[in-house]
Image 1 (cartoon, rainbow, N blue to C red):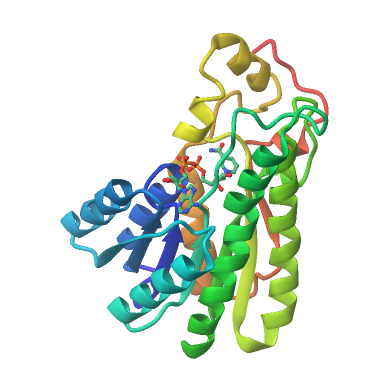
Image 2: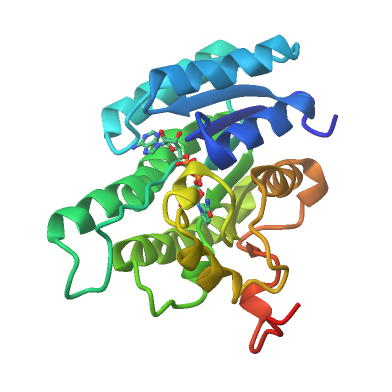
Length: 259
Ligand SMILES: NC(=O)c1ccc[n+]([C@@H]2O[C@H](COP(=O)([O-])OP(=O)(O)OC[C@H]3O[C@@H](n4cnc5c(N)ncnc54)[C@H](O)[C@@H]3O)[C@@H](O)[C@H]2O)c1
């Protein structure tokens, strides 16, 4: 129970990596605030946690909105008497997001808002709660595209995730002496609704598989294990770091795809 006494605020907790992380953090003893834009999804996750005997609160917010963010954090802090950990995980990946020439400004704006501005707003609203708690942890969900480029571009998503990574480092340095750690995780492709939509056909999957040394997608639970570790005091000397969790993808130069 390495998160006993921790109060963990998770964005995008209604699905995929956020939901798996909420389940894992709760299993490790945390009280969890499950934030999502979708009311039923946030409620479903919170209900799953409560059924397992954990303390869980669902809050609904569009985290691209500053007031909604502030309200969500205030609700979470009021429920559990404070917040110790923020997992900024909510994000979107739009099908219309492509190269810089092809991508509409509206697609760019929506993608930046959901993936980058939301992280900024959650830090803005959330850091004062961590400070009040005497310190805490911010875990930002970036992506391998913050580390390596892809010829099959999603330019707005990539730019947003690069921004998340840079922002994580800056926050880590700013708050290092105030007992607040900030860490980025950089997942490769993970089997969630977000990715399954892109890899729906066999050709798209085989193309991606070619670049995956392990030859498989990650599972949301594998990401959740890293999140729980980084949130815990076992990670007490880790700040400003970026963790690839990608089945070897960002370490690969040439892959033997015959196996
Ligand atoms: N799945 C992958 O392969 C992968 C890889 C690298 C990074 N990521 C990142 O992991 C995070 C989670 O991805 P996932 O695959 O679990 O996605 P998902 O679509 O399964 O879940 C994302 C959740 O975020 C919520 N959300 C979206 N916009 C929101 C907003 N404005 N306010 C509040 N909630 C909002 C959605 O309702 C959803 O429940 C994203 O930031 C994504 O970019 C995913």
